[in-house]
Length: 295
Image (cartoon, rainbow, N blue to C red; front, side):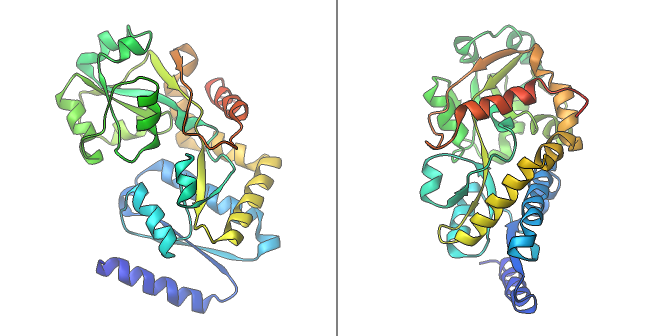
């Protein structure tokens, strides 16, 4: 256990004593994540959900913890009670490790995938019409990402043998890979990348129903209930949709992507929890794809 983690836990325990009667909601916000605008969006959604449920459940304090961990490790930290919530793509297997808050947070946008590629691949990549053509390349994916299995079960060649931190470096040195990223992720990541020979393919998009959920510990019924009620209130009064579409990073990404003019390859998602309303997710995704600048 690192000293930083130990000190962080001590501060959390102290804050729980000082703010007795106030919900302390702990989540990972590592220094690397703070540079990621997507992380800022989900923190804003968390704050919105807690705010919308404040009258019924009381005051709250968001407690960020600065330690970089993997998605898999998040579930361990939830079960150990060291964090209270995190956000990730939903899958049926993940519901065995933690309790989901079953309200979509990102309008299905993480199932709208664009491809980061080496510039040398751009001309050939622009001619791809189907999975057969796509499989002339390998998709770089994370070993514990649901997307890896989604793509594999749809017959798409994947390579999950490399560390995530090396993906863009590998892509910059090889032309036989592509890196499928969510529409709200890809442009900002390439802008921050040190590699100037990487681009976003302008012709193709993979689309599969996907939802981002908040997850809490299996025994944390109160926080699950609070977040679910807060999110549903935010949906009913339009504040969640307003936050999503008016978030500056999202607006910029949608304009850059111009998904409506792309060749769209629709895929099923065999990993979705049974209770997910696929038609609802498709409707949300179409709203993203067809969104107007008036948002």
